[in-house]
Structures are given as structure tokens and as C-alpha cells.
Image (cartoon, rainbow, N blue to C red; front, side, top):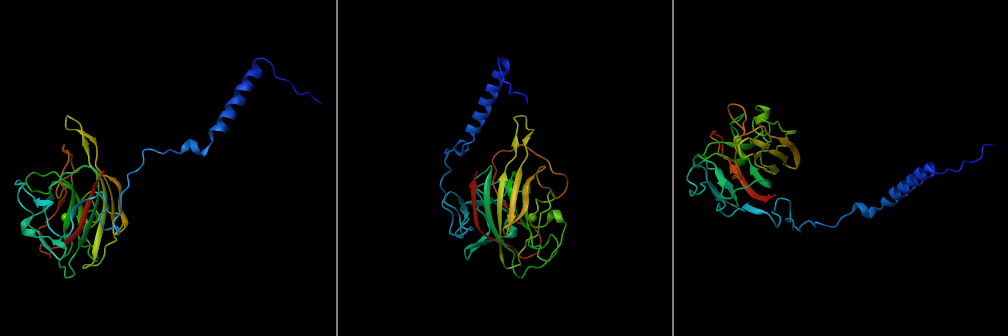
Length: 264
Ligand code: MG
């Protein structure tokens, strides 16, 4: 039987270092080492329901008036021309779209909309509106990034233009549409694009969207503004208003309620 060799010299030193290293590694595996206590998340009081604004939200529409909005177009003093009634607002197509008076970068947004029960039309001409997560037009045109609003309950159209799509860019992951006449809700997380001083793109816009609680856009990276005709492109901008679209189709106008935003 071979006697157990006693290490000596250099060999002993290497063994000792290895032992200390293992000991130290075992010692480091305390739960406390991966627990930290700051920064403490701020306290936010949630609404009584998920449709009500939490305590730190900016309420853009609470059913009373359109003070937080203006008419789209060059004249920034022009009041929003949509109808407020029964705690909701209804699109007035001839008055054009409406923009928030306040400008935003990144945010969480809650919006509820209702397609009228008596909706008519088909394809894109059936309850068409839209939430422009950033409107970068200075003359009232549809220049920006549109999250489509449309009646797609038993109504088909090009899939990258149906409700829940980032218009003509990203097909929604599902179609959780409710029937016309029922309220529906969007929960949006928007990260605005960033631009370099020379005007070139630094980081693209990203968006996550739930429609009626169902994920329809999962951190989608936009390739630019959403266009009716032509390819998306990026053009330098900073903070922007949010816009609700007045679409020119002949179908009955849709309504909105409970709109609030949490800048991030
Ligand atoms: Mg639209």
C-alpha cells in the first residue's frame, strides 16, 4: 500500500491557495449577498380598477372636458372639437384629430375605446381611428407612429392594418376584439426613438401593447413613422404630443374614455 504523500514546498502552497479560494467561494454564498435595499421603488396608489388612473398618472381625459387636448394643425391654440357627453368623448370627424397639449417621451398609456353598436362599412372603413403614440406632424397630417384602432370583430383587412397593429409595420400577435358596442382597452408601453445631434437615429422606437388584456405587440422595434403610402422612415424629433385620429371614412364615429399616461 502506498503511503499518503505529504505535500511540501510549492505543491503545498498551491493546495493552500486552492483551499482558501474554495472556502471563500462557499462563504460568499449567503442570501444577503444578492439582496439590496435601495433605491426604494416609489409608492404608487393604484386605481380601484385597472382602468382608473394610478396616483402618479397624468389624466388626459376623465369624462369631463377636453382641456388637456387641442385640435391638430398649425394653430396650437385651437380647441379640440370632439363631443364630450355622458362621461365619454366621441370623434367629430370634420373637426380633425386631437393632440395632447402636453408633450411626452417614454410612457405607459391607458386608453379605452368603443366602436358604435350600429357600425357599418368594411375593411379600413369601419370604425377607423388610431392612437398616434408620438405625433410629429406640424401641419395636421398623419405623421407619427400609429397604433391602429379599427373594428375587426368579423371584419377583415390587411393584417398589418387591423386593430392592434402598428400601422403597416407590425401585425398584432392576436385579435382579441370585442363586439361593437362594448368598451375595449389599450395598455401601451412606449419608448420614443432617440436621435444624434446630426439627425441620424441613435435608438429606434419600441412598443409593447395589450388589447383587452391580451398581448398584441411585444417590444416591437419600429422602423420609422407609420405611413399609408411608402416605407417607414425616421426624422429627428424630441418630445411629442399623443394624437387621437379622426379618420375620414364614412362609418359612424367611435368614442373614447379613461385616458391616462405615466411618463417613464
Ligand atoms: Mg387609423
